Amino acid sequence: MTNIVIIGAGVGGLTTAAILARAGLNVLVLEAQVYPGGCAGTFYHQKYRFDAGATVAGGFYPGGPMDLVAQAAGIERWPAHEANPAMVVHLPDGAAVPRWADERRHNERRHAFGLQSDAFWRWQEQTADDLWNLALRLPPWPPQSPREAVQLVKAGLGWLGRDPGRRLHPHLILDAGRPVAAHMAHAPENLRHFVDAQLLIAAQTTSRYANALYGAAALDLPRRGVVHLAGGMGGLAATLAKAVEQNGGQIKYKQTVTRLVIKQNRPVAIETKRHKTFPADLVIANLTPWNLAQLMGDSAPRRLRRLPAQPQDGWGAFVTYVGLDAAAIPADFALHHQLIRQEPLAEGNTVFLSLSPAWDQDRAPIGRRAVTLSTHTRLKDWWALYEPDRAAYEARKQIYADRLLDAAATVLPSIREAADLVLPGTPVTFQRFTQREWGWVGGFPQTSLFRTWAPKLGPGLWLVGDSIFPGQSTAAVALGGMRVAASVLQEQAVRGSIRQDIPPLLSQVMEL
Ligand SMILES: Cc1cc2nc3c(=O)[nH]c(=O)nc-3n(C[C@H](O)[C@H](O)[C@H](O)COP(=O)(O)OP(=O)(O)OC[C@H]3O[C@@H](n4cnc5c(N)ncnc54)[C@H](O)[C@@H]3O)c2cc1C
Image (cartoon, rainbow, N blue to C red; front, top):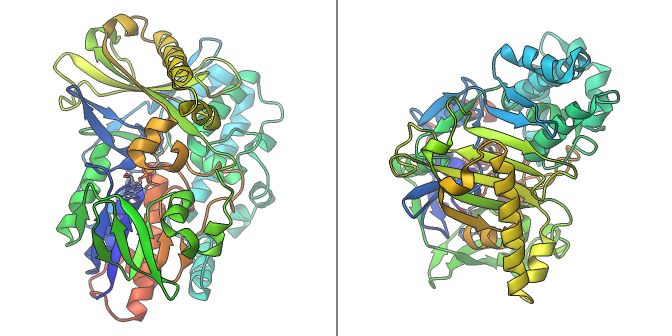
């Protein structure tokens, strides 16, 4: 039977693993860390459980991406609790704008941005509805075989349905090639701040550059509902990991993959830092392209060998984890806040603050809460200091941690006095704990629909995670994971080696 090895137990790798294992394939996941989740993991430190990176979990509504994953992977339920508002956005002028999932959002936005902003939000919501309707048909974008091209056309025709006029509206076609800013010509300054900051976390770029279709869909996350997962964001990966094992797959932790052994242009084995070798007929790398290139060396496919030495755009994250006395938190304080202080955004000028829920006793000692603060940061400045001037690197780290705490103090004034633990982390830290080269997180900025990669890189070699379409976020990498699973199942079915009871949803997509 085909040996499938998945490198990395991030949300992308685990989604693919759980579905393939359920279809009866022989799946082994090798993970460097001692816990699953990668950028969406939750780690223990001094009696707290901190979300390492991702804190806002979306896509759990009926028919949404995580619901589809549950159906395909045989997950009965997610440990998810609804959160409304999804978050509160704090503008530089001091205004606080909650992002409600329900009708309250209209008044809130009118109040904050004026009546003239209605046209922007109408465009955003209609476009997002159309795009999500298409995305949830799991179109294989970009297609990599004649069969996938046919599936793409079928998904497109199903999407056009009874209303092709509306869906092929010139706006939608033009939006495929222009940025969100094309819809913001007369937008007030505070709306632009708001949209830019939200796009920075959802599309890794701002309205001037974010593709309009992608941007409209990404801005919709709060309206589609956000949840808190019991045990933190890591509860998502833990549920997927359990499904992998229940479906007959295996996960081995503390196994850092160091090399792919390639023979006749195909992977045949995987070697790990602990000097183990695992046979592999098919490898699915839940890695950045740079990480995979490094594991393959000269035998990497041409696309990987041609990569620039470092990512030319995209981001790292600076985070500060804080253990906090719960008394410092005002009553009815939402659990997620985006704090926009000034432009240029990022580098501590925009900070995302997330608190563990009071009901989640697993996250902190009694009477205390776990807080994750994060900001986007450029990678090169950290690495320029790290080796040659460690003292300057540490000083910079302190300056950034202070910036994040200053921003947090605008909504939690006594955060410094109430903290018994302040733990900063830079892109260097992210590289150490997620293995991602240079701590490059969030994948490619969504400037074009062609920016992210197609998953199949060569015979028996696949990529999954936030470098493939549709890009970053737990819901997006889960969609990408489903796409990879569907494509692999299709290939394996052609070879006749899979169980007949493959998940109904995927068999429908694959027309098996
Ligand atoms: C600070 C920050 C905040 C974020 N906020 C949000 C948010 O609020 N909501 C949201 O939805 N998304 C958020 N994201 C994005 C989201 O976390 C990611 O898009 C998603 O988790 C990426 O998943 P992935 O499957 O691509 O891989 P990763 O999370 O990168 O996982 C890859 C896994 O592979 C393992 N690995 C790597 N190399 C090897 C090797 N050689 N051998 C073995 N194992 C290896 C790693 O240890 C890791 O577990 C955030 C990201 C960051 C960094």
